[in-house]
Amino acid sequence: MTETSNPTIAQHATEIGVINLNKRTLIGIVGTAEKRRVLVRFPGGKIETLTLGDTLKPGKIIAISEDAVMIDTPTGAQKLTLPTRSAA
Image (cartoon, rainbow, N blue to C red; front, side, top):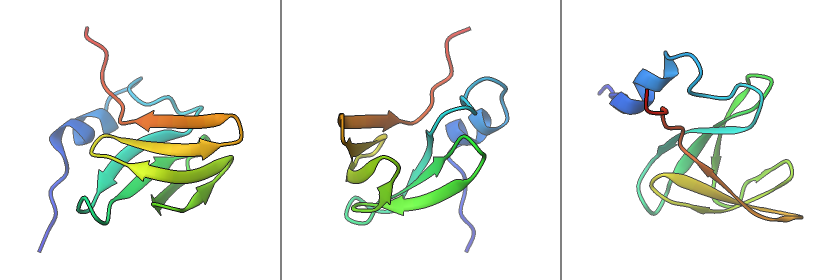
């Protein structure tokens, strides 16, 4: 069985300027509502697959929705959302 890419994410992956390569970025969310995983790209280019409860600097994943992940950090909750292309 093969998986197909989300057309929006696939398009953004090949466009210049959609993803800020200098900061942590949510690039994908996969799985069912009960077992979601997120793909996070870090500034150095490393991509990690993470799930609810996993830790990443500087916090812990506390929620994953269809289009965002919430991270509990020492300075408060941080929300990462999937990238969107700015209107041209």
